[in-house]
Amino acid sequence: MIARRNLIAALSFAVASVAAAGGSSVLTSRRSFVPLSRGSLLNHLPGSFGAWRRRPARDDMIDPVVTDEAFAEAIRMYDATASQDYVTLAGDRIMLSVVFMRKIAQEARFHRPEFCYSTQGFQVARLPSLRMSLMRRSVGLSRFIASMDSRRELVVYWTRVAGDLPTGSNELRLAIMKNSWSETFPDGVLVRASLFVEPGETIVERTAVLIGFLEGLIRQSAGPVRRFLVAV
Image 1 (cartoon, rainbow, N blue to C red):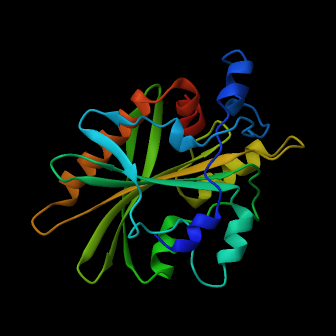
Image 2: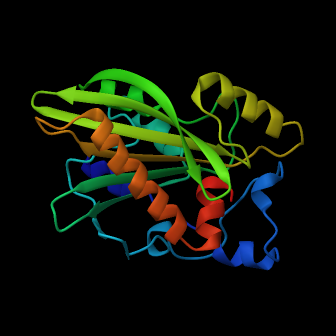
């Protein structure tokens, strides 16, 4: 984790605004979902579930923004970021990162995690995307392996644009276009989770660990958190 990430505010979360909407999903409209309440998303994520326990993010987590001349631009583009580790007593560790934009447009959208890793010196190998069932939604997961020296990291991520969950650049552009027909731009979230792949471990095995973690995280999160992350 680059120290400059501390300059970015923790991700605000609109528990009060969702509750005030009477349970109706503001995420399915074309209006921006603008956090209004105080506090941060990290305070609303489960502190523990199953074998997983939440811990502060360590310094080796990759920043969700590149660290070259584009850093200042990325800070301005993202309204907030949040990063956290989840660990087990058995020694597993998953690195969770969430970035939020109040207004997404074709000319101002998420930096793809593949680009963030490659810019920071990693060799990136894309893997086939997967579908994951989360509550009532089918979520498309983009995947890749990032390697540098002895470090091999399996990364999965998804994006939410208003009430849509696009996978890949083309679907993301279409989702932004569809949700920008009104006069107000949509909001969006990019959720990234990753873990290390040690010698002797397979991509299939480690992918299963990530998916199990994400399914548990969403199921154990409060309703407003689920709506914020996956629009369910």
